[in-house]
Amino acid sequence: MVSFRNIIAGTIALAAPAMAALTSTQIADTLKTLTARSQALQAPAQQITIINGPLIVVGLGPFPQIIQGFTEIITITTAAIPEIVATPRFELDADRKTVADAFREFVRVHQVLLNILIGKAGLFQTVPIIGQPVAAVLRQLESVVDSAAFALIDVVAGTNGVPEQANSLGNTIGIAIESYEGLQVTKRENVIPAAAIKAAPIGRRAQMIAA
Image 1 (cartoon, helix red, strand yellow):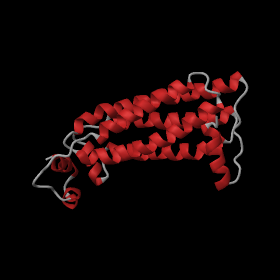
Image 2 (cartoon, helix red, strand yellow):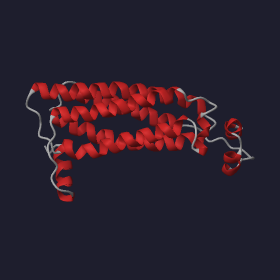
Image 3 (cartoon, one colour):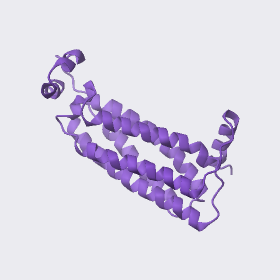
Image 4 (cartoon, helix red, strand yellow):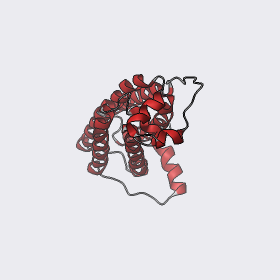
């Protein structure tokens, strides 16, 4: 059977110069960076309210910061995938454990962030404009996390609970996507133009959007 890693490796080999193999510590350091980025987004996610959430329409409130944070996580992960793919499978248990432990902590912290967002989605059933941009960045996240997880599973030979952790994270991302894709569009006769919202005082903007 041809492994997913070999398929990716073959594709990358045709498109770019050969990548240098990483050590287990280097992979773990990248995962720790992603963990720190995820941790940093938890506070703004907790600050989402029915008042400040709709301000996303004018680039304010917690959501733009969260979307930017996810975009940075996606960028870092995308850059790391070819290097992980180019890394031979680790033979030493210590190397596998180093990577697996870092991945496990990333999954734990990232799921906390995602579960906060899932809980906040229920506030915005009548503000569908929030759903689309959040769901869009989460779909991008889902794609790169899937690719990275496959590569990591291969590098650690599927040991130390990495496949189970990857599946668990994938399920949580899927729930988050559904939570924001499922926000219902409310039919309104009087739609306030975005320009008028942007020109209004900050304290009035959320009221105008949710009206």
